[in-house]
Length: 223
Ligand code: IYR
Image 1 (cartoon, helix red, strand yellow):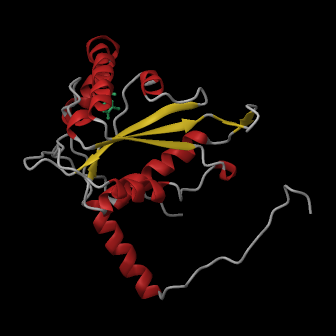
Image 2: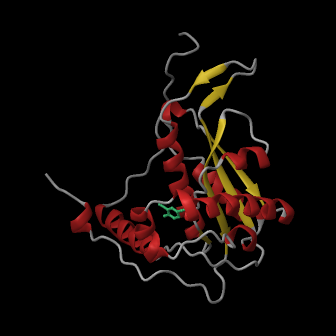
């Protein structure tokens, strides 16, 4: 056997009754239906262990060639969050004033987004998911990574579900461009900021846009 040959071990799996699968599926879907994205965070503290749990859950995500091309930078330092907010707002002012297209502005109108990013300083944690666009060998050599966008997208989904499961809220924030995050958080050149996720409790008077979700019939096709 060479170093690279596949090595398999038995799958640890307990088969559920059909009834139990149905019950758990219904419960999980209903639980996820309760998840909302809010822009209004409480500044109440959240234990670091909650963030550790969410990152651990995200780290179970499948990834291209199991290369796990993600780094989660969890920021609680107030001064650093402040600098992230300043930099994000500078980019967003430019975006909302000049870069946004009329069509894009219309699409965002129901969400009430703007260039003011209070969540970046209100939330006790701001987690930045960095995508490793390639790997770095111990000798500094580059290793090709595969499907890093898909892998990080799935990991972000797991993270968001874990946050919701803990009774906390998050907002998927995509400042554009995000280059400033790599500089501020001193990440290596192979890591690109992928998604910013403030995590905390919702503010007491938190609001959400009055949205509905597409029904199963609208999103599923059976053949
Ligand atoms: N990046 C901007 C704009 C923005 C774009 C989309 I698409 C959104 O769903 C929300 C916001 C911002 O963060 O405000």
